[in-house]
Amino acid sequence: MITKFNYEGQDLYTPIIFRDDFQETPININQAWSLFFSAGQEENELGNNPEYGWFFNNLLIAVAISGMIGTLIFASI
Image (cartoon, rainbow, N blue to C red):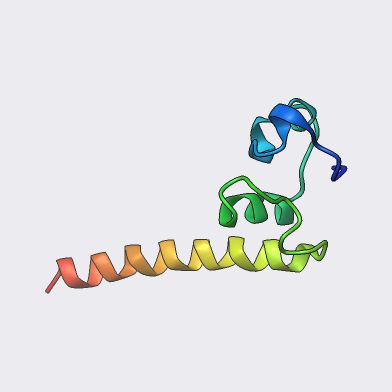
């Protein structure tokens, strides 16, 4: 994904996810989490290290699994 800093007119304050040049470009896991945390405003906020993206994916999975286990434990009490 290419970051362009010369937006003019209607694209100046438009979130990145609604711009025409973003619609057909593939993004990596790090850019996806950056877009999530910045509400679609910045795709490189976490940098280019994919380890951050994998960390947030694993954290999300761990929270979901621990929530399910906690539900099973407290439902059986």
